[in-house]
Length: 204
Ligand SMILES: [Zn+2]
Ligand SMILES: [Zn+2]
Image 1 (cartoon, rainbow, N blue to C red):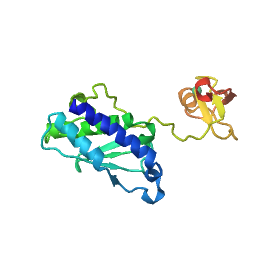
Image 2 (cartoon, protein in one colour; image 1 turned 90 degrees about the horizontal axis):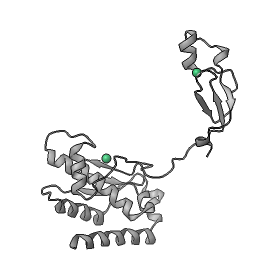
Image 3 (cartoon, rainbow, N blue to C red; image 1 turned 90 degrees about the vertical axis):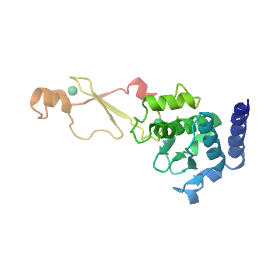
Image 4 (cartoon, rainbow, N blue to C red; image 1 turned 30 degrees about the vertical axis):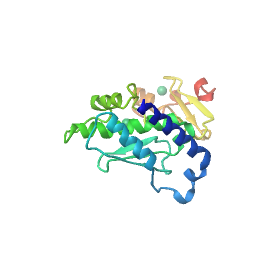
């Protein structure tokens, strides 16, 4: 019951922060500077206690310089670093990432001097103890990466390998795979890339 209240307060505090100071999280002045977060830090340490863990205390920071990495954990420094963009996704996403990273530290703490696999059984157990039993191992934010649009597509007439280009091909280019396989690695007109329509999944 007390635990549920803690979660609720946590969610409210994050959402309040979104409403009150969204710019603060992306201010250029603060770029690449870690900002500590006493609220999240306190929450993380309470989660550890709730998971029955004694003798480990962690620090929690935001780092606006992170791009698509949702969060990271450093065992050496006993700290978690989160991407402020998580706040724009949802309070739930902040929490999930916090627990994911905390599980790395908890797993290593329990293992003592033994090395543990990043997302191995010890980490999975720690996730279960931190109430995210089906956590996936992804550290990447659910954002689209900024991508250069590739508009020109070519295919190898032999093996159908597709070549995607930002600019059109200006010279003769053949499929390396097929030239190696059938022509000793030397250019062969037969394997020259031919223009094709964009594949559906890329064109979408
Ligand atoms: Zn991880
Ligand atoms: Zn080919």
